[in-house]
Length: 256
Image (tube, rainbow, N blue to C red; front, side):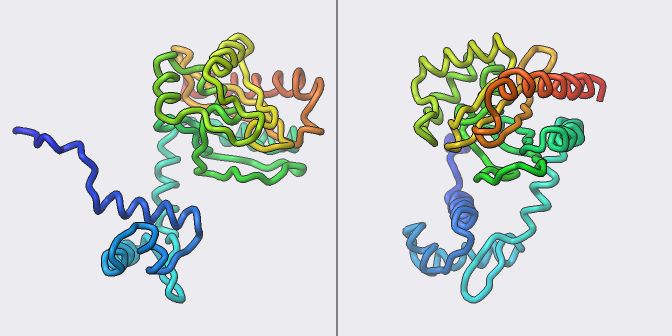
């Protein structure tokens, strides 16, 4: 069978639907005129897109505004459950949250971005923008840097070429040479630090979970206020604790 030359071109109607979903994810809700302005299309076209998504339970219409439907939860749950890492890491993440009383995340890489697939809060954990399903730049946070450092060099170059090194705070790495220096340090040390690089006033430590070829399949991180996660706690106690947890998860995965 001959494959059409344009078989890899995006389908415009699908792209429009994705744009609507992304807009509602970021803004909570929107009216037909707002979506029309955002897409730069005719009002009738925007209305058809919205009604199609709404009739399939992907959107909810209330008071002339549209928002994401709970149907997305079904898809997200199934997608997450496909990760064996999630099943093995979840109890350890909960245990770390109880032991450290801080915020713990299990993170994976997908399409060159980091995604939080599970998190647990200790009784002293602080709130940030991070949430389950949140996509982030790998170089901006501890778990992401731990993953990045345990990818092949060619893959790191692909990710940097695709997404660049945008800053989230004044402390974020934005220079390629600095990133490679950080990658080598993380590889030697076995874990990564986030020193106010994703949120000002927040410190974190992340360690990779790797396969038999030492390629990252995910990472676990511990985060908390910079004034609390500092000194020997950040540099000695938490690394030992985190590496022990990651080692257990790695062993369990090898025999899952």
